[in-house]
Structures are given as C-alpha cells and as structure tokens.
Image: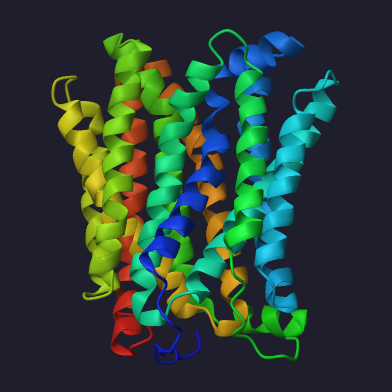
Length: 411
C-alpha cells in the first residue's frame, strides 16, 4: 500500500447558508422516490404481474445492481469530462422517464429492465451531486456539507416509505407517478440553481490515468469498507427486523414503522451537527468509536423486549450519525482532485452492494438457525452476525486508520 500524502487545504469560497441547505434539499428530493414503492410492492408487482414473492423482492435488488454498476462508471466519466451539473440534470430526467416506464402495461422482464436502468439513473444523479457538493466547499468545511447531504439522504429514505404508503393506499401506481413528478422537479431545480465548480485543469485527465490513480490509492478502500458494512447492517432492518417484530412480538405495521422512524430520524437530524464536529475533531476516532458502539448495540437486539426497543433504536440512530458522515468525508479526503466523483461513485456502489446483501444474509441466517432452534433464536443469530460484521470491520481498520491519522492524510 503506497504511503499516503498529507491532507491538503484549498481556498474554495464557502457556500452561503442558502446554497448549503439547497444542496441538502436536492439530496432529500433525490432519495424520496427510492423508498416510496416499498409499502406497495404487493400491489405494484406481485398482484399486477402474478409473480412469486421472490420475484417481487427482486424489484429492490435489481435497482441496487444498477447502482453498483452505474455509480463508479458515471463518476469516472464525470471526472474525465470535468462536468457535474448537466449530467446530474440529465440523469434526473432519465430517472423520471424510467419511473414513467414502470407504469406502462408491459411484460415482467421488460418492467424489471426499466427498473435496472432507473437504478443506474438514480445513482448517477446522487453520486455527481455529492461530488459537486464536495467541490463547492473548502476541504476544511467538508464535514458540514457532507453532514447536510447525509441528512438529506437519510430524511429522503425516512420520508419515502410512509409517503408511498399513503399515496398507494388505493392505487399502487400513484407513488410511481409521484416519483416521476419529484424527479422532474429536482431536475428543473438543478438546472436553474446548481452551479458548476470550475476547479479542474483545462486539459482532460485520461480515463486510464484516473483508473491508475485509484488503483494506486488502496487507502480509499477503508471508508468504502465501512459504508459497505454499514449499509449491510441497515439491510437487516429493511427485512429481517420487520419480520422479527411481526412474527415474534405480533407488532402491527404502524408500530414497526414507528420503531424504524426512531432509528432513521435521529440519524438524519444529527448528521449535520456531527458533520460540523468532524471538522474540529478526529474523523478516524468518530468512525471507529461510532461503529464499535453501533456494532455492540446491534448484536444485542435479539434480547431486547418491545418496551426497551424504542431506546435501543434511538441509540442506534445516534451512533449511525456519528459514523456515517466521517466515512463520507474521509472518502473525499483520500481521493485526489481528479478522482472525486469516481471515489464517491465507489462509495455509493459499496453501500448499494451492502444494502443488497444485508436482507439476503439476514434471511438466510435466521431461516437456517430457526430450522433447528426456533425463530426467536434464528432472528437473534442474524442480528449477532450483523453486529459482529461491524465490529470485525472496526478491528481490521484500526491500524490502518491510525496510520492515516499519523500521516495527516485524514484527521
């Protein structure tokens, strides 16, 4: 692993508060359509196309596959051409068009093809929006802009599902039509108010040079590993946790949604404050400490009673905010100026891969253990696996992060 170079500073003028909030608002709008279809999957897919539950669940997975493949490539091309704004606008219009295609009377394979390309369009817009946000602030203030973007992302995820449930109560296609409208609105706002940051050299950086730079910068794998594990564990909440609450405690959907909200909303609300804190303290220690406590709490989830779970979910949301923004900022610390979008595309791809594998792993572990020891033990085992995965990531990354800190490549 090559020796890291020290963290540099620049003189980029600070964003006004209005523009700082606007960037976070765009991130929120970009994420809302992602989770709106979740509450209406049965009517949107299973009943509409007469397919199995496994095929229905592929609706979310195929989107993640599109994101995994699209994010790094889009980032690399954006770094090559040196443009962010208009690719963001184009991707949002493409996302709106793909959402519209999902409403058409087509075959199930063609429907899933549209969903794949919708995932590509979405992740292109989000990755380049993050890259543009990073370039709009000096390196000393990356914590606040990434905190604002992280808050927007998390609020978008948290708001999408309940909004989709309300809109799709009588017609499962209404959340999809709303997704078309939101993406078109976001594209127009981006076209009108986003500003391209002209910081890169006039001459183009060849794709092979971008790839060579990334290949020689193995340190970037540290924050990417953390975001993979973090999204991997969040994937347990999207499926395993909900099934656990229903099967073991017979909790109704509104109560399950309330528990998930207790996890997501503190996460969103505290992302910006912890982003500001990351500018003044050690990002490495925040990432390690937050991840360690989060992993410990998560592996105990199977032993908490329904009365204690609200407190656990609040603590999980708090520690998620502590560790998420530092991993995002660290990605920008470790990427060169020529590879910012590529690195952030890799960050999103790693997260998407974790989010896709989390529900699969949680389901497999819980079902396998339940076959011989009962469902409560099965679910408990799955949460132990998730928590231990987080703790293992901390232990493996500890010496590397300490080395990065001592070399002043990150704080």
